[in-house]
Image 1 (cartoon, rainbow, N blue to C red):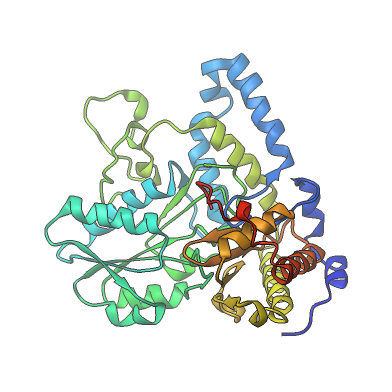
Image 2: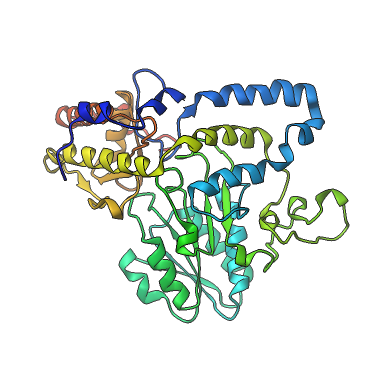
Length: 411
């Protein structure tokens, strides 16, 4: 990797003007946008308008006059452009966990006679928990089997596997799967594939169509900046539309919700994967947050992401060994997402000391300190300063104070 100069990189950054579009607190270097994205400034006014005018004045009329009823499709369409989805194949709805329940149930039904769900042990836990629950609910020998490392996955793609369920970018290590190659290998064995894009959408261009993915899910509150608990999204390849009745047969998935028919008749479009009434305030915030993405060059975004991560790794390399930091994120850019993680002793305390100094990252048990790099609002100068603060905390053992070792509910 070529040595990066922070000042020069910031001066020539084609994305630098996006920073002013976010409400970032003074004195904070925010390296946790991979867990909760920063607040786009226009979201406050949009949500306030929805509350005071649409809800406050128009009341129930706003389902029509303000287009509330169509927000799942509108927001889904905006996300679809960022993840390479076909038109009318993405909706925003519910949470990532609930959406995984829907698409995993669909995938298993579409692949009868096969009983295994393959994933990896280091997948995000909620994905594994949902898979366990779906397998238990179906019974009939269905079960979840886990790969210990990515290299083990190809050998596990056997004739009794119904679904391969993977997260594109690993939440702990930042390891990035080759989506197209893995999907093709699974399809060659008659296996359907579900991709979790929680750490991909908004961090890099994704090409679900090019990879011929069957299903995908993801959240809206990380790189997409939709706010805490923002609506999630799901993608269904158009060839599967109408092929299965997803199990959460709520009225918004009905072919005619306001006909109020006594029995369920599912929509044959992506709308079938909706369930209950959408959360309007969350959808509105998400819709507004996504508006600025119409102006983002995804190639430039990825290039800056790679450069930010490379810069951080280069700088930390100079002292990592001295203080017991082991890089667990791939050095090769094409094998990682937009985060850098290290394993180390006393990781929780180290991260709390960093946060106290204004460098916000996070900790993932048992020993990972994790730093997310969000190209739209992070500068190279901030990365340089964060590294200097990390080095100071390690060299002075500032982390070794009782207050930094008290575990909070959220790490």
